[in-house]
Image 1 (cartoon, chains in turn red, brown):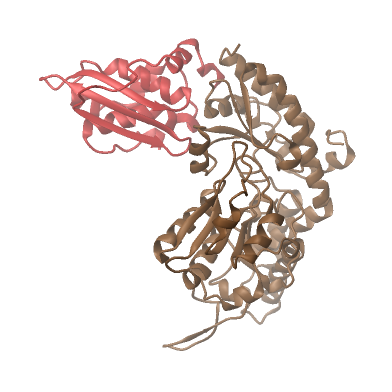
Image 2 (cartoon, helix red, strand yellow):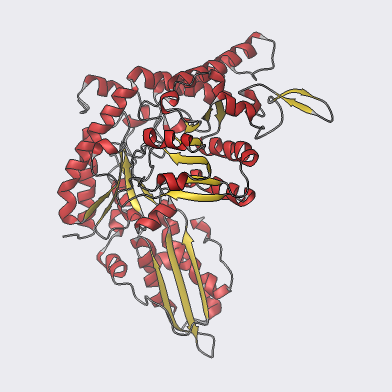
Amino acid sequence: MDDFYKEYILDHYRNPRNFGHLERADVAAEDLNPLCGDTIRIELALDDQGRVEDVKFSGKGCAISQASCSMLTESVKGMKLEDVARLSQEAVLENVGIGISPTRMKCAMLGLKVLKSAALGEIASWPDAAS
Amino acid sequence: MIAAADPKQARIVADFPILAKPTSRGRRLVYLDSAASSQKPRAVIDALVHYYENDNANIHRGVYELAARATDQFEAARAKVARFVNAAHTEEIVWTRNTTEAINLVSFSWGLANLGPGDAILTTQLEHHSNLVPWQLLAAKTGAVLRFIPADANGVLVLDGLDDLLDGVKLVAMTHVSNTIGSIAPLATIVPRAHAAGAVVLVDAAQSVPHMPVDVQALDVDFLAASGHKMCGPTGIGFLYGKRALLDAMPPFLTGGDMIKRVSYEHTTFNELPWKFEAGTSNIADAIALGTAVDYLSAVGMDWIRAHELALTSYALERLRTLEARGLAVYGPPRAEDRAGVISLNLGDIHAHDLASILDVEGVCVRAGHHCTMPLMEKMGWPATARASFYLYNTEEDVDALILALEKAADVFRLA
């Protein structure tokens, strides 16, 4: 688990990408992980093709939730909203590139849960293996 | 006298089988989360097995010897708990699942019968959700208002405005020891003034009864709630202490079997204390094993346990100073004397959850998060804290392991 805290993870934690708010968001969602109090809000702006033109996230929490969300936002630009709604937790784990212990899976998946909620227009359930 | 080499300390550590089991990574288990739930001594584990193998039957019903034996042990455990907190009468101890259920019992039974519009409930800014949410709901149901004794930046209650706060108060519901920062509330000051104002006092003693001598008559509290699993007992059993006159006058909380005296199709008369509040088959085995836990704690000595935790806390606060240069923040009263064996902290910009994960690799178990005190965390501006808490089986070696693990975490996060 301590192998998790690699340089690039700490970099995303301390310098999150796409952090802040959009002036004009087409869809947005927010949620929290009641276990640790991590919160994340994600806002998406779409182009006329329904693709993600811009994305911002805000919130606070542990390195795992914030870094994985930061990395997630980097990967969704240009994606169609329906594909965003179908993103899998495997994609997130691959993105993050390190093993996550079961007790921290919810932290790692909070960004994905919020992103999918924004795309679906309703609160998404926790990704399967994270529940 | 708190190193593992001390004979009494060594015997205590050996009494807890789980402490001899290494973690999956082969580390010695350093259990610093007793404020969440304590470990169990062999005697308590054996009591559970012994009951199920020798004495198991339903209580208060059977005429056969086995049922009588189960009933006797169940009631003997109640008497042990009554003596442990120095209740004047055994029937002033009501079994509940835990502290939360004990508080809810008072809220639903005493609260609904005694509170109305314009009345006030006074609690504190330190409360665990279990001693806040029931009063929020009770206030909403009855039209009563909820007030708070403020806490300062160290989590110490500020009593300057206490008399104003007590005006019109029917109930004071407050924690004895903060589960988040360990501060000990000045009950000796507050309780007499609450009584003078005409209020009844309920104390959440989940974090005090396991760790220090608690005498309900000396404190003169009206209700006191505690959990068995935090005091070396099993999960699923706790108790409410209530002064007999108050409990007598209260309507039942849960209703059904065992809490009745006589039932017709139209009407029911209720059982005597304490059974009026114990509907349905009780948690017999766990109550009996809690009696064993109380025997165990009494044999060690509650004064010894308090002194031991005080010494460990002083030692830990001293050792933690070495980490100040790396951004360590310790919350709560600065003097060990003013707190129970609870230390909440943060290290640099490491989120408490990340800190707990890194400590876990080293075999060190600490709690991370909001500790079920979200309003306090928000007031203090802490998104989360990591909390180490001590009990009778912890040693200076455990503190040393904590310090080493924190240094490791500072390295992992490249803190200067």
